[in-house]
Image 1 (tube, rainbow, N blue to C red):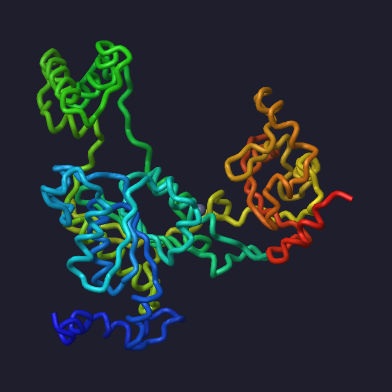
Image 2: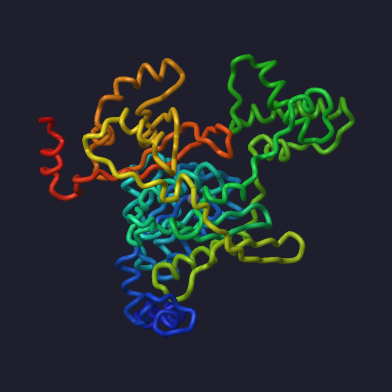
Length: 451
Ligand SMILES: [Zn+2]
């Protein structure tokens, strides 16, 4: 391709970036150089290289992003090929992230995509800090929740509980389920985080075991009976493997027997797979629509060329076509993205002094609190085994227990009085140590040395 046609590829993008407008973001400075800056300085991580991830990588590459990375622990399966369009039959068994990265780089010149063939939890938290935007193409609530907590962990608040802008790590989240989909923008500290609106994802409906065992009414009931009850009865101790075709075949034939017994129709092999693996039907076009919306939001966040989605788009193509944007609000007391309660402490304050202080704190009045820091138990009131294990921390300075960082987050679980009732509650505390500073670590060390 000659230079002229290479430039031609960006014609529309250039129009978007070089012209002023009425609905641009306040930071937007239209300029023909904006595309170069976007390619040079903006780094985007795509989480997931499945149906949405493939689309996202392609869309971002074609929107002028040049520094992309993608993370996915999965390998390519035959059943992916109908919609995960970057993969071919000879790719089956290879890493999704690696193949997806290579395919997009082959097609879009100048883009660099670094693949990571691993679990999202395998990466250090610091790995995620490097990206300007994180785009999610996931199908699991747990994975979303994890990335959300990572992004929110970078967020810092000033002394007036306002989020510090430079610590905001934007997330763009896409999701699809059959004909339905959503795209959302999460600006931690500004718009609701995933946890603020966790109620949007209702818990999965599971069938009561008694229904499965005694009164099955649907094909799915028969399949779950074979899967959850019959398998263990027959194969004592042998773990069911949903990826093993022989295991699946066994469930299918048992479900079929069960269905015949109760005069139920509709048990098929593919339904068995669907129920057991909890497969959500995937439609390529829904992925394309949701991903396009996400890629556009990423472009807007990176360049300011237009206002961003505020903040949750739903797409429903099931009966006719409906789209709607809802502006959800933050949960101010969210334990993940909220500011928590600011507590200023001297670096010599011990854990037991802190615990006493929490009871007297006018806003908290937290009695008998247990304290954790970054998932580690500093002190647990119960059970007795844990209490005994953590008791030795009580006389130690909290500053030391928190790794001698000038500030940090701890969580306290205890009891508070609410409308005259003693209720258990969990609080997030933003601890700032007086006299401890980021730079001049020597100072901090000196101050920490007991006289
Ligand atoms: Zn939140």
